[in-house]
Image (tube, rainbow, N blue to C red):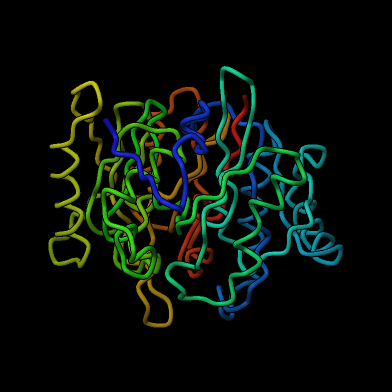
Length: 357
């Protein structure tokens, strides 16, 4: 049995889990893809103009079969976004704009966590605290309230757990299991007042899950302190794709081997081991003498397509082949992410899915 936190902070009966809500796996049917239009020059110093073409391509491919909802600050930003998206040839009737000003573009981390209740047919929003990865990139006041604004716009029930959490730090198998990293969630710049067991309880109670599995470190160059969505991704209830580095001299080699070994030792709720499939890493991608967190694991699973960042690398085609093998019912498409990754994230970091009920 989970030891529920009985404190002044929250009562279990007020949580999504107690009320029958769950956070679905990403491959379950979606109503929409949510994005926050990129506008912060400092996130792509000297390069922001180069990202709009691949970003609009991402929108185009997903909008073929589902809605794409984009946060913008005002009419001016909407017009600018429209000019790029229209140029891509996207299906415009599937694209809508929502006036939610943001500080930055990383919707996976500041966007709404949608939970659903299959019994009642309700959808709700969890608005975790957000502090831009431990206060690294202030200000973040606009980003922090985006989920609440969206819940109000769509008249959805809102849950506001009193801890800092980012969507990129958690993976879900759709059957009660969360995968995360100690490097991120136990970092003192997030929730120094909470221990591991308390953080687990928050995750289970507010995402409607039953088990938390922990990996260690994230990849070199990741400024989030080790988000899971750059290293290991659930692709079914018992299968993960995890990146490994073949070059023993590479800084990522040891930590990714350690993650691999940890994954092989893990057990799901029913006692099954994980089916672990290895995904290669691209060669180091650097810009201005900075190693960037380039990883094929940062893909987005939409209803009909899986969008994968690629890096003009010899391993691009191999990675796409492996990802295609685990998603036989979807078309796996690579989009050049060499410029986007200068912002220290790619398609999964930029996106947030809204599940169907």
